[in-house]
Length: 216
Image (cartoon, rainbow, N blue to C red; front, side, top):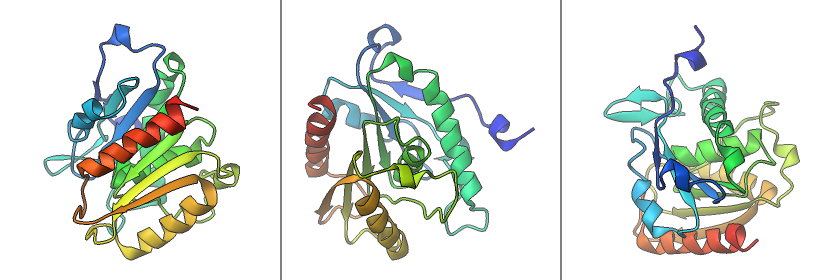
């Protein structure tokens, strides 16, 4: 049995009951390493109410929570593991996306790596991407990452604290180059937030989603 087949059925928290979702723009939340689908779900009530919010659980148990793929510094890390996780999320999304006029991804930490990977694998599928205290993976020349098709038109919000102790400088450097080349970037730096999310940032994300997705 392949690793993908061994992944569990998707676990999702929804902001709306099933009968109330169709026709509304979808915002998918992707949590960070060792967390779960409930972690970011409190954001649903702080963001524009026009969205239906779905928070997806990562498929691999780790510690008290879950991860999308092994940590990049781990001996178990590979680009194939990242792509497998993205395939898992995209396969779930394929079962519901027809009900929504647009799909936007919001990822925290490793969840931003997931969101940007999903965009890079499906360059035409997403209205926008929000990355919070995260990074994009260095995929080298891997053909599964269709960066050449990203012409800088997809809006991407990247919020972070320069004193973030978790995301290493090499990841920041790669991500900075990648987002500037391939997305319509809105970058905001915060102080005193460390590896987290603060109220000011959520306000900025709400404005970004309103202007770049709802008003576009």
